[in-house]
Image (tube, rainbow, N blue to C red):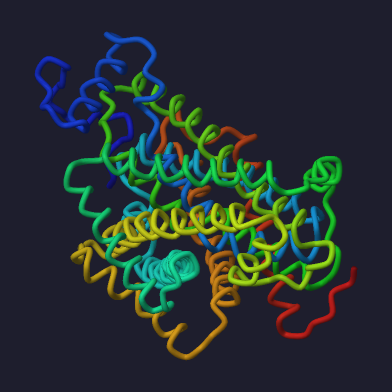
Length: 443
């Protein structure tokens, strides 16, 4: 029987005077002082888990789907990005709350609370989703390096692998260095797209209308819309966020849990607002640059080569810098999530380099057999969208249970919104599958 969520796990108290000298120790000590009431404020201390999770919402899969959305349909699918981001905020906040209150991540709770056959099925589906995630992230970084430096794609993949593995080594120094590194890369991606918006000739009125007017121009737009959702609300991010809260601090009572949940919700809104704005900027840039006259642009490589004569070499270079930052950082985060999923569902860890090698294989296969890389990226996002209901439904089931969550169980409104978000994703997936098998859909 699981421990009560209101039973604190004993933890040696930390203070700024006694904490070690590492940035992680200092951060942990400062967090403990805020939670105990000895220190006021400290919002930045609690920034980290949602920032790391947010990189999943700006990975190369987003580049592929957003370029296609903007080039083919202009600003018409911006509302899908907005809706997906709102759903993401809700479910990331639930994931963080689950980890804070129970002290366990989503995969661990699935293993302990659900029937064993169902756990194995969920693990397989989640591993497939993790492989699709790594395919998108690894390919994106390799494409960016290949285009920016003129490297062969396989060489770009090799460089991406080395850089990713090097960044993962910072995990041995605790949670804070990785949070700062990923936060810096998120900032770089955001600045790149802010610069792109100043360069591209944006029709702001049409963009605003597209962001608030639901529409589906044609059947082909549905696959891109589902891909946007798969690239925005990421399955591995839902598992990861619940686990990232475990390594930061252990609340001693319900009051500290309430404070942690409050800070967490604030961070989710801030971090995913930035991610949502970056995604909207991707679609807006593609719509502004390509929709009129270049609507056939559907590949990252074509987008880069088309940007140079349209908006200049600076715009094309900024695009590639953001793609490389996205590919490397999201590859790091994807590996962290894959390890957490495996450990949670089956109870053991494997070395990082083995995990990295296993998840590299699909990307190398895709390149070796000559599959169009951007098409592979888009399809990987559709796979993610198909797998997404697994963690979404599990999150709703666990966070509404009072025996697990105590006073932190979802309110009726939260349950309605969460169930509505899950139904939306399931409905879109069902329509996509019917369309894939040639079933005519009215409207």
